[in-house]
Image 1 (cartoon, helix red, strand yellow):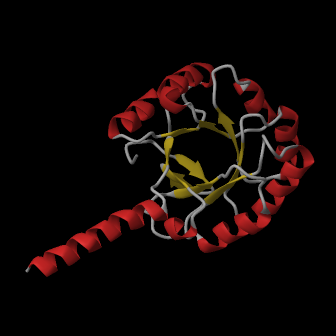
Image 2 (cartoon, helix red, strand yellow):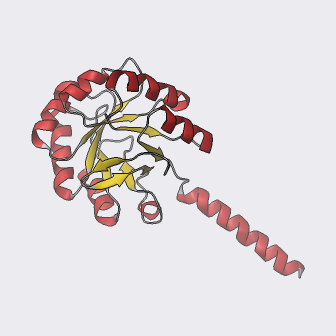
Image 3 (cartoon, rainbow, N blue to C red):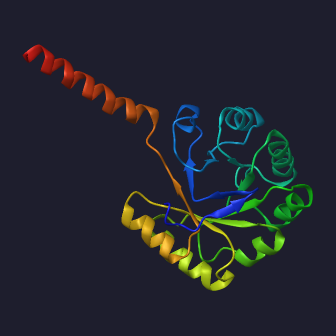
Length: 206
């Protein structure tokens, strides 16, 4: 991820964003920032807990699918007041809402793009300052297509996938920063406990 050029947000260059809302993970990562998006209605309690606990810049989800309209605008404004470095809107978010959000925010709006058929230019014209590309296995290809539309300068975040090769391909396609989904606390515990059990067997054999 550090091969990426990075994106400047409020004076900090960001190359890697950790996609999680787990506070324990957030406080034990060497990423540059946190992307706190989750598949439920955004709540200020969750945003506040993450922002106040994290030592890293936090970008919070403010809706677009389940939640939209004036509610998303209000959530975004509250997130800024709590210290968020940016807000993320999901792909279905209407351009009208992005425009209304832009009128009240100083922090950047990050618009999620999931398809080449999305209204990319419309989102940018409405006030999106950064694009967040999430195209699954086709992310690198999608980034290349978007670069043809927006040029070389517009900042793009993209999902990095689960391999070094995917990350490099996505960076070379034109992504300035990558998101990474870490293992859950349960998955990490599973490995730790397996090691503990192995150590206990070895001691017993001795």
